[in-house]
Length: 162
Image (cartoon, rainbow, N blue to C red; front, side, top):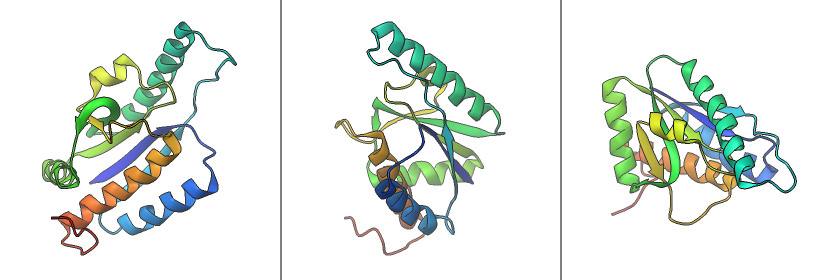
């Protein structure tokens, strides 16, 4: 199984790269992971609501085009209105996908969220938290949680939850 992180935006601060890279290296023996950075829509200085919808739509087309390049791949989208999972619940979902032989494209949308079209095509809508998190931090938290979930599935001592 392979997980591709489809992320809108690039040029992350060094602390993000450092944190992300730490968990990226750790997870590779358990789960092949790739990050695909997608260009964010060019934004106006003072965007209107219609501009925001256009940005989501443009970025959504980029996300769906990147997803279309893969074969059998579930589309998991991070969305504030998505279902919250415990780490153990995430471990179970990953194990199920592995059992089915599916790869996963995990989407971190742009600053204005993801388009309705992307949400409509999502196999899983997942919320990391009820809190609003900055997108750079989401990359680090997401990789850590993927690593933690896979450590559960591989009986690795990293996760010491109850």
